[in-house]
Length: 116
Image (cartoon, rainbow, N blue to C red; front, side, top):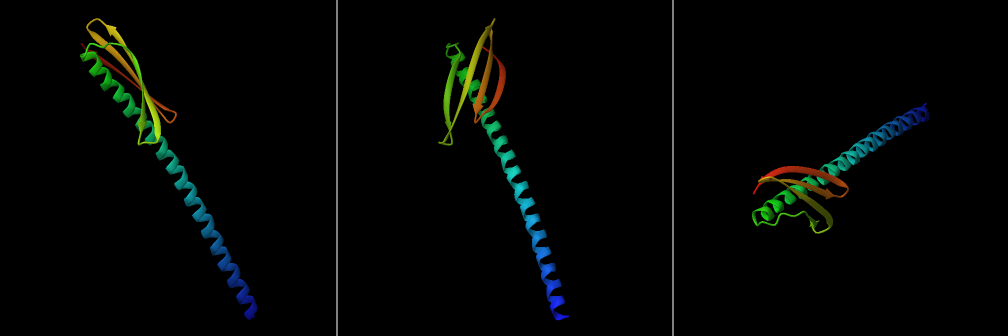
């Protein structure tokens, strides 16, 4: 009878251990997917910042009388390459500026009207 109790306890402990392993595996999977989603959001935000940089650079160029389109390569955090491309279209006394930020495969486009 003692061996039956030991066997039942062993099966119970192994069942608890297996359940914990499945639970821990699920938590790890959820954490991995959350980290991947966070990384994508960060990349999109960096692309937005690059597009905003292009808009600001266009403002400076327009005020200086240099109304032409341009492309700029940027190193972000010392290890990732990003870029922004700016197209300036003259519409009377206003300039339409379209700035596209690219970072790690993410793209953000901003459009602004800037007066001369």
